[in-house]
Amino acid sequence: MHGFPECWLSWRYQLPALAAAGFRAVAPDLRGYGGSDKPSGVAAYRIELLVRDASELVAALGRDRADVVGHDFGAHIAWHLAMWHPQRVRRLAILNVPHPARMWRGLRTLRQLRKSWYMFFFQLPLLPEWFMSPRRLRSALRYTPARRGAYDEAVIEAIVAAVGDRTAP
Image 1 (cartoon, rainbow, N blue to C red):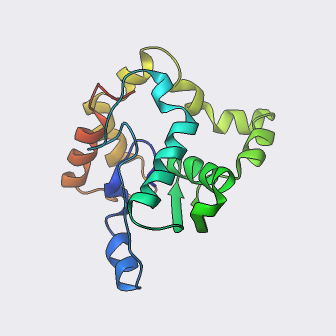
Image 2: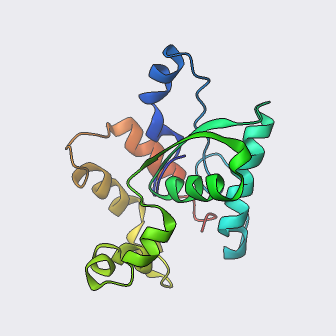
C-alpha cells in the first residue's frame, strides 16, 4: 500500500520483480487516491474503513491471506490490518512507519513531535490544499526525494493528477 502523497505508481518498479519472484503482486490506489473512489467527508477516511477496504481487497482477489507491504500512510493501514484482521495477513513488510503503539509513545516526546510536524499540518484547514497545489507538489516531487530524479516527469504528472483531484480529502 502506497504512502502520501502517492498512488499505485509508487510500486511501479517492485511489481515486475515481485511477479518474477512468483508473487501475485497488486498495488491498489488507496481510497481517495488516483483512480479509487473519493467519498466526500473526512469520516469516509477513518482508519477502520481503510482497513476494511484492504481486508475486502484480499477477499476480492480470491485469497484468504496475503503478504502485505505498506509504506508511509499505507504502512499505517497495513499495521492495523495485521492487528485487527490477522487472519488476512500471512506476512507483513512495513516501510518507514513504526508499530502504532511505538509511534504513540514517540509522539509524547518533543523530538518525535518535531519530526512528525507534517501529520498535524495536514489536519489544518486550507493550508494543506494550498501546499498541495499542482505547482508545489511538482516541486516537492522533483527536489525533496533522497535521490534527485527519483521521479521522472511522466510519474510526477501522474502523481499530480492523482493527488491533485480536489474531490479527495
